[in-house]
Length: 329
Image (cartoon, rainbow, N blue to C red; front, top):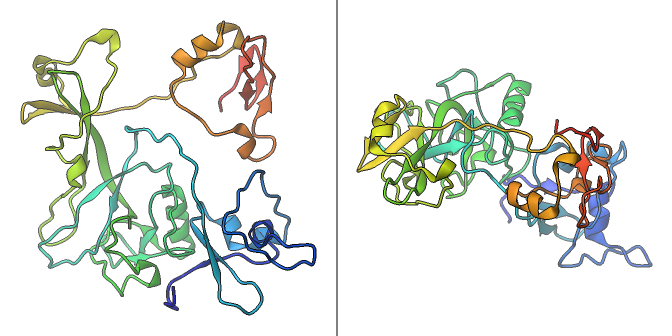
């Protein structure tokens, strides 16, 4: 905590988050409780929007100063959230240093570009010397944000030919930590491994080769072709793919008695109208992925349409339309 090069996300008194963490008493003195629960959306005026925390994708650990004392740190505990196992447009995420002459390649894996899971890794051109960028140590951003951060600095998000502490900048401190991840523009495939015997599946990643001397591609053992991390899958009409199916599909191949195939995911609206829903039992049996409370979004994002005539205490929220024409855009 005493490293001066370790970038912190400092919260200033103009921020409504500071007011929550300070929790002033009747005299206006901060009580700084050990645990703070945010039970409502915080309203940021123009002055507060200049704060660092308003302009980042995610908040993890923040620092506040009370008077002239040493900083106090608060860690954000994220609410549990559903993350899909399979996704499209994956990007290669690397986790360690890269050195052109180093024969040892650090394992990498596929990252969902829509999620805030890694840091920007910027360079003057693809294959150049990588510099890690961040607003604070431990920051995680989406792929689009990583691209924008690099562009603002006149750089590009690519795949580094060289990446090593301390040359990669202050944000590269702790690069060897197990949870440290960096975005690259390299391609990555999310594949599925199928066990014919029981219909269970596992996740496999295939990544673009590293730019080191060996030009090899090494992925995390949990998602390499030899993985045994199988889980249950629901097959259409209960039919499990067979070895013959695997051999007939050009994007599939047989590995250690299992079939590994490329995947493609699709997103579709389940109900276009509340008239299609007859009961809460029907909803619970057809909607399998959870969602955060619509109230956590910016005001006006969702409209509360009431129960739309659905029995059982249902509240219908939509981004547009009405009960007879629901929108999910």
